[in-house]
Length: 105
Image 1 (cartoon, rainbow, N blue to C red):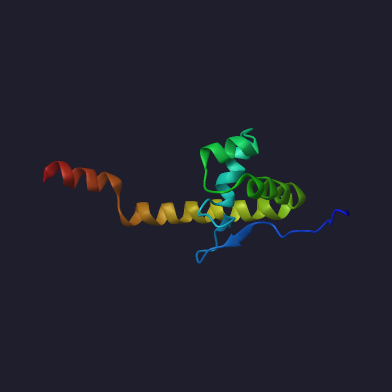
Image 2: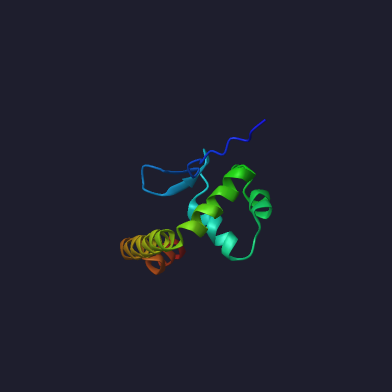
């Protein structure tokens, strides 16, 4: 018997907001890589986030290691966009003003 070696695509997909998700889950690439960069193994990641399967987590880590510059650029864009949205929300909904209104009412 001969073992067929087949290249499989990374188990990543973009949702409607442009976030990259792992496998058929709602777990983001950002989440998996943040935990991986903190030193978690693929098995530990699956324990924390059980919806992706172990093979998909390993494949996601392999994709990151093979495309580190591109993935880091993506993560940087996501972080920047997150900060922009946070600033817009804070400008629109001043937390101090809300607190004052709640305490007064």
